Length: 332
Image (cartoon, rainbow, N blue to C red; front, top):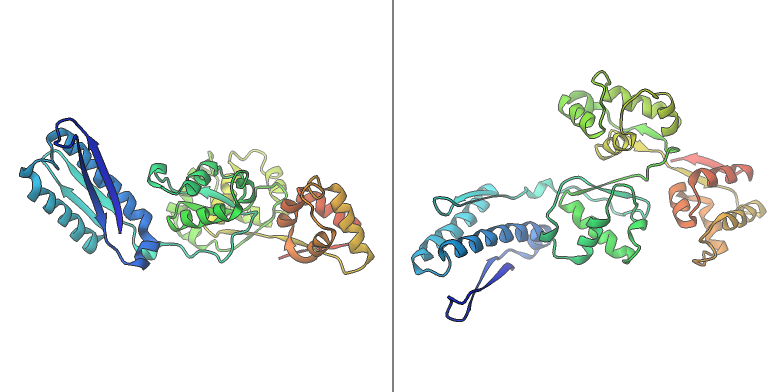
């Protein structure tokens, strides 16, 4: 049961107030998927009834009882049949609402990495979100901070649950931490090549101010550049927001990030490199990062972004130190 209870305090009512509730009864599976969507719908309908009650006693007056019943029935039938409704309540008031189809929900990845960066894709009314954890996370998302950096005042499990919830609403997408040393490869250009609409969206989102620039060619050149920094140097005259260009490419699966891993075989060299990284880390001692834990990072199992986040050392610095110790840096 999803409800939106309302109480209006006025001296004109017998008990100095009037209370009523709008509700929708749905099965458990649908509740898990769409509770937030129905809550927004009920809140919208409830506000309409509040306005009508204040204007003409629409809920209190007996003469409108049949009209209220028709209004609720019309909403129910329209949503069942069409997933949208346009209900004319009075001559001057109407309610228009639309539900997203179930199949539009994105397939979520099994894991959320601490170094993933959430970006807001669609607006959502913060007041419609009742979970305080989700509200807090929404306020913190700026397209720059990664998931780990959103945990200053809350547990990381709360942040990840909030991100998953916002993903279901198609309000959030995940990209990489933006770094000039990042390297990208092409994933699928076909959709961009075939769609002039997507090309236009890319130019608007990335703020490409030169109409002669072709987004397809820009992604090709980005994917063949050793790093984002090299791409920028080779396009000094290009007027574009490179951060947003990369984000658009990642979200639309046009490009993918090439993550690098560090491997050095078990032995004295791995121990020396681990000690050097602990020495360079500002947080290793503060947070009690153990020597064996740092050694484990050097077996090639985690990427540079994850190492950098745990040790608070820039990825390029880790790479330079690892090379001095003859470690292997390999892409994946």
